[in-house]
Image (cartoon, rainbow, N blue to C red; front, side, top):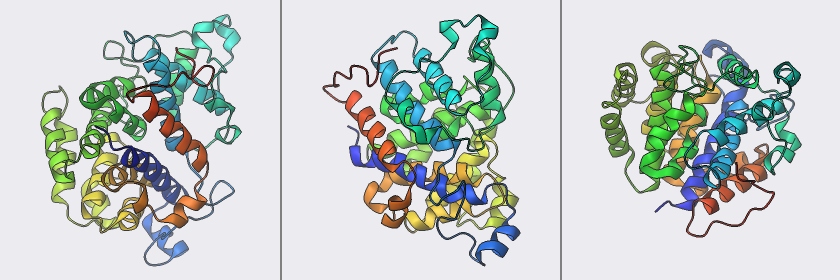
Length: 350
């Protein structure tokens, strides 16, 4: 049985970690310290015209939640059709969609401008989306087949698959394989899609009262059954053995977080060392790498452990689109509950 507050905590804390990391993404730790002090960033800083602003990580997590709701109401034989089109709607919000007319305006490749989520104009904001993701979605829009095991679109192991994977915890044990299939829509390297399955499984276990060390061990065991697991398992082992991370130790031993296995490793190391939510998220974002993604993933993990009450209230108060994040998360919980609502036009079945 899912703990609703801890699932909401996972999504909200993920968004908070994303917003904490956004101003320092792409910055070397020396620059971060010069700009914000010897401890690095200690809270929200101005980015994208405000404080507490989210990035593509949280945007895509929201569209993942929407895709799960609409897919659950639709064709269960094809679990990724609704998700692919949810991401095409996200692409539309980024104002970088291709010319649909080049494919004859085919309905199958154009996002339906329907449903509640896309009516939230705050999502129409360009927040450093990953090239691998946008290229994959634009390829689908031009009429090409979507990514899958049989159709690897690329050999990318970027972290764009894992950063959006936490919602798949709603599928329980099945979430591991489904999150892998989701990541394959955009990322073709094992470390790009196995990291997504690993995060979904971690969150699933944590929501059902597993301890974090036990959840990591169980996830590691599950990874061993998948071809190409070696790099991801080695990164997870390094995170467990790491101890309390520093920006320097992250760079030396875990990487920059730009790839799936590195991003998950940094987040896991920070979560294991965390004294509380604040401490863990700041450990996860203060390094010379992909700070918003590592912060988001660490938030997904710690939120699943501690729930919403562990998130510093001042960070929640300033979080961009907090009401939207809470609403779509609660809607997803309702959809996967015992008596799913009749959504009507809010979440049309795909």
